[in-house]
Length: 236
Image 1 (cartoon, one colour):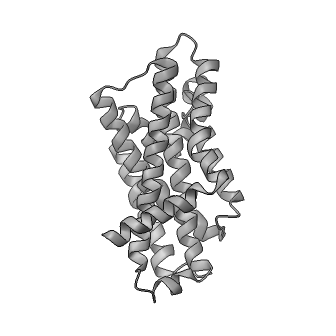
Image 2 (image 1 turned 180 degrees about the vertical axis):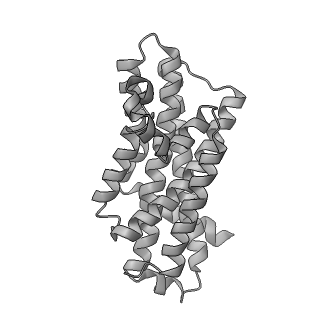
């Protein structure tokens, strides 16, 4: 257990030294909330809460997609996996430390957004709303960690080159109801929203549970990443 704690600590230190990662994990979500709230949320408390759940989901998707999947795939591509298998500090413990560090970062990112929302707009979740958001955060971490592994395995992108992952990320975000009710604004986007993997997470954080879609996405992505990560070893 001590090994995992130490590993988590050093994973956090490594992450906090990356300025780009700090920006997108902490500054970007809060900045996005403030901007969209000021532009679209004037005298509209319902939209502000809608936006807040969207920004929380955005934070989870960003950190899970960029900070877990690509890192794990890179271990296989640069040969580090062989190194981890021969040292006393086992690879499984290293993976646990990696996941714990990213979960801690996501939690702090979400807390920061909640503080900003409270300071600017006095938004406080009820116990039930907080429960929905918490389950949504956990589900989002699982789903988009799987997706990050799959994309990194398919594209062979590492942490320094994530152009395709960036395109996917922004497509998922802006073709969804993360920032605004896109389906109500333009009905033509309804079908796109329905098949977007972020949609069941957004629905869950907003108290509108779509369990079939959520479990379907998690199961499908888990199976696909198993094929790439375990069967192929992502050695390409």
